[in-house]
Image 1 (spheres, one colour):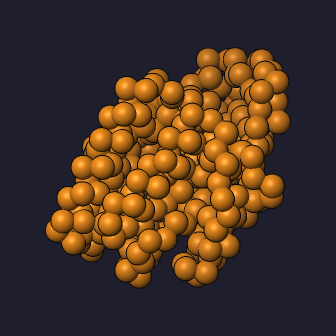
Image 2: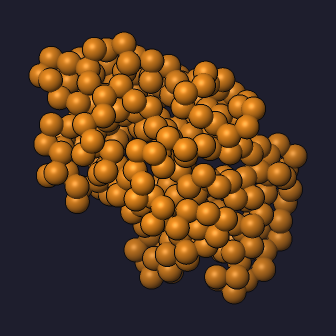
Image 3: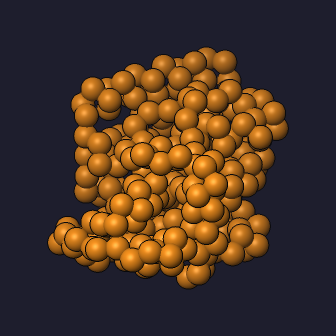
Length: 253
C-alpha cells in the first residue's frame, strides 16, 4: 500500500500497508468539515486528479476517503445510504461528493469510503473529539442544540478497511461508521464523568443530526458484528481516547 499523506489516518493505516501492495491510499486533503477554503479545495482536487491518473496508468487501485458527515447526508430522509442520491448541504459535503465523481470518472480501479467521525490517539486539534475535550478541560463547552454525531474508533476503521481491500472491490462506495448517531450533549456528559469535572454549556441553535446506514458494510464485512456497534459503542471509544489524552499520547490543541 502506498499511502499519500502523513496525518492521523495515514499513520493509522501503516500496520496494514504491506498486505495491500497494489493499493494507493489518498489519506491527505481537507479534513475539516467546517473548512470552506477554495484554495484547499482546489489543492485537493488537483491531488485527487493526479493520483487517479497515475493509478489508471499503472493498474493500481485507488482508495479514496469521502465523508458520511452531516455535510453529505444532512438532507437525507432516513439513514444516509450509498445507493441513494446524496444531497450535500455544506460546501465540504459538495466538495467531497464532487471528488467522488471525479474518482469514478477517472478510469482507475477504486474504492470510495464515506467515513463517520473517527476517534483515536493523535487526532488533529480541530477535529470533533480533541476540540470537545479541550473545551471540557477549559470549563466551558459550546453545544449545538440537537446535534448528534456517529463516532467510530480508528482501530475499528482500520480493521474494516483491511477486510474491504482484501475483497478486491472495485467501483464501490461504502459507509464506514457505527450506525448510531450520539447526541453531542451525551458525548460531553461522558467526557465530564471521565475527567471528573462539570462544565458550563453555551447552547447554539444550529445543531444538526443524521443517521448513517451501515447495511452495506454489514453485508460486505460480517465481522463488524464483533466490533460492538450499538447504542453504547461510543462509551469505550471515548474512554480509550480520553485515557490516551490524559497519558499525553493524544495531544490536543
